[in-house]
Amino acid sequence: MAAAGPPPNVPSQARPWNPDFKHTDRERWICIYPAYLNSRKTLKEGRIVPKAKAIDNPVCAEIRDVCAAAGLTLGVENKVYPREMEPRDVKYRGRVRVMLKNEDGTPNVPAFPTRASLLKYLAETIPKLKSRQQSQSSSSQSQQQQQQQSSKGQKKKGGRK
Image (tube, rainbow, N blue to C red; front, top):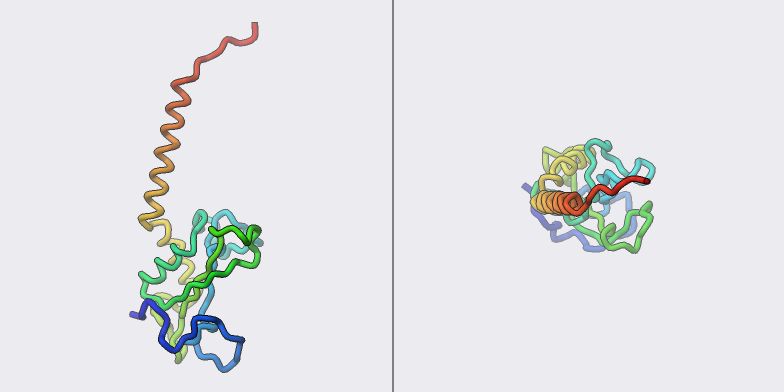
């Protein structure tokens, strides 16, 4: 398994591109924006995964938590997706960089040889997070309570006479 943090020789800031970079250099890691997994985005707006597998408004922290739990080496950056309509909104900020390959080009974690395999795993795993399940159950309970309250207080009014 890989370490959760970046290797000690990896700089925290990205450097200008150089063709001599190795797979372990931070500039060669893949970028994952929450928009790639967002079911409310169209393909033109940047969604990559199929609509059926996409997630409702994923957050950078959820992507980070799932990648770290899978044993991937990652880094989080305070960036905004270029196609984002509201770039100043805090909930859309963030991108996760993930090291997929070792220095020799072999997969860092054998379960994720490609970007597509990692995105598929994220789309399957993020809805199972405890934070997601708690927020969904609380929102469904509040909707049920609102429906019950609105049905109790309504009386049928007489029609036009």
